[in-house]
Image 1 (tube, one colour):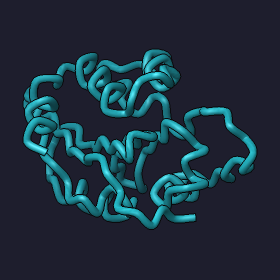
Image 2 (tube, one colour):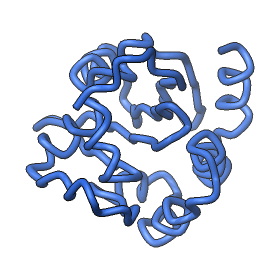
Image 3 (cartoon, rainbow, N blue to C red):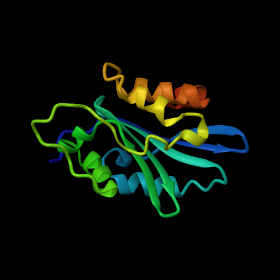
Length: 160
C-alpha cells in the first residue's frame, strides 16, 4: 500500500484572519500522515479560516480543513489511495472504499465545497480538480489565486 521511497511535495498551512492571508510551511510529516497534518493545523489558533494544502509527489493534492467535529477533506484523486497512505487515510476518514486497482479513472473524493466560504465554489473547484494535465502545485496555485492568497502562497513555495 505505502510508497517506500521518500515522498516529495509540500504542505502549506493557510490562515485568514482579520481580512489578511498568511501562509506557512507545515512539517513534512503532513505529507505522509493525515493525523499529523490535522494536528499541526489545529495548533494554528485563529478566529478565521485555517486549512492545509498538500501536494504529494506531483500526483495529487489534499485540502484539509479542521472542523470542530473532525476535518473537512478533499482528495483530488481517489485512486491515489492505492499507492499512498495519506490518500488512503483521507478515504478512510471519509468512509469511502478505495477504487479497484484496475480503475484508471481520476475523480475527486470529499467536500468540493471545502473552500466555498472563501471564494472557491464547489463547481469551480471541481473544474480545477478535473484539469488532470496540470500538476498538483499548479492546481493549488489556481485555488490560491481564486481565493486571493496567491502572493503569500507563492512566497512560501519559493522558500521550500
